[in-house]
Amino acid sequence: MDKVFIEGLQVEALIGIYDWERRIRQPLVFDVEMGFDNRIPAASDAIEDTLNYKAVSKRIIAYVGESDFGLVETLAERVAALILEEFGVAHVRLKLGKPGAVRGARSVGVMIERSAAMVAP
Ligand SMILES: Nc1nc2c(c(=O)[nH]1)N=C([C@H](O)[C@@H](O)CO)CN2
Image 1 (cartoon, rainbow, N blue to C red):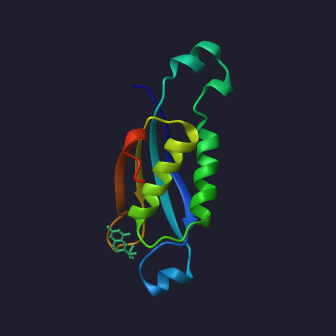
Image 2: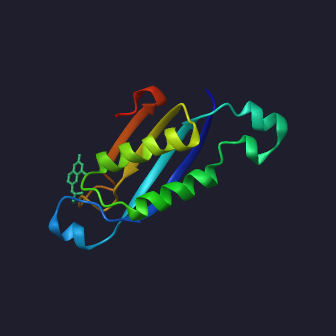
């Protein structure tokens, strides 16, 4: 399956389980891979036929900027569901990094893979 990807999308968010984390915003980094048949836009050369990575990026930025979850797991799950539901994507692989959360590590976080048929109720 072809893919459309977004790499290193940085968004500031209110996230974390500790009291001090509830008072600040922290950088999060998203890498997203979305299954899409790119032969159709390749044939038409029309942006309307694409899975528009700019539109998906803007939606992620807006959603994450307003979110206030405790766990990165929860946020990753919600962002994956949003991509599947709002952009008609059949399969998404998402990595959510929280750089600076653990001293000595460049980043920590989660990686998930979800399909349209697997979205939690
Ligand atoms: N698997 C997870 N582990 C941890 C999380 C998390 O969201 N998922 N969060 C924290 C804290 O909020 C941490 O980021 C603060 O440094 C700890 N472990």
